[in-house]
Amino acid sequence: MPRWTAIVRKSSGKRSEGQLLASNIDTVLIVVSLTAGLDLSRMERFLALAWESGAEPLVVLTKADLVDNAEAVRSDAEAIAPGVNVLLVSARTGEGLDVLRACTSGSTALIGQSGAGKSTLTNTLAGRKILAVQETRASDDKGRHTTTARELIPLPGGGVMIDTPGLRGVGLFGGEGLTYAFSEIESLATQCRFHDCRHISEPDCAVLAALEDGSLSERRWANYVKLQKESAWIASRTDARLRAERLKEWKAIYQNVTHRPGGPGRRR
Image 1 (cartoon, rainbow, N blue to C red):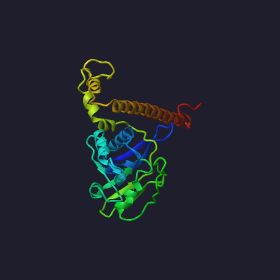
Image 2 (image 1 turned 135 degrees about the vertical axis):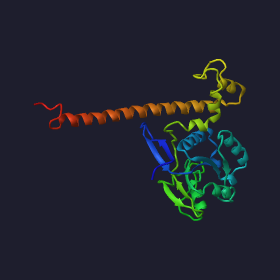
Image 3 (image 1 turned 180 degrees about the vertical axis):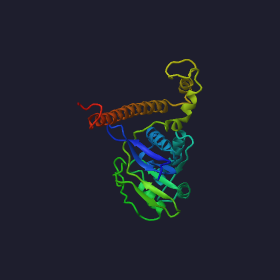
Image 4 (image 1 turned 120 degrees about the vertical axis):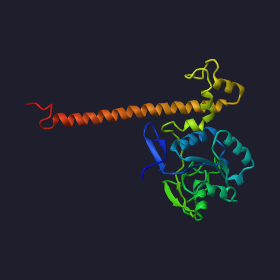
């Protein structure tokens, strides 16, 4: 089937290839455990990855029954996720599950760290225990990589769900998703006096003005710059790899042409 959406992350290590996690999905559930604390910079990475897929991101904050500040954390998550719904969910009490079911009527993929509750959510939405689950470590609330492979699960309502292993590294492969994940920064950049503003010391820079008055946080700006640099590096590596592959291919073609009987390079 042709792919109309695809979640692709950078392969681990120094390799610059992309790793396909799921394709032909309507919704990407970014699953975050409230008991592990909210890492805003990591969530921004997941949001950029989700937007880049072409599917609709949805942030799901799990284990809402185990913390006292769930609403405050949701407000923090909403502040860095423009245009994205953020749900509070508890598989134990049932909080938020009806809304979540309504949002997963099509094809859905879950991404997040180990221990976030992806497999538990899948079992709950499927109405039966399909995937194995384990308790997180009490010392640091880290998961144990219970899910080791991607699996497509049919849901009672007619949709399907793809549970994925926990992601330690969230390397972006492309960078187009940053435009949506940091839409307010992209909008600010269009208001600068110079269209090629670097947002360093230029006069009438809207980004610097937002940093100065506090409407744009230093942390969010620093993470945006970091992710932009990573994406540019991946693009340069990918282009170099493609050039090398093309050169190798044309060398093989040339060798084949010049050394075949009657070819232009054959000695007579």
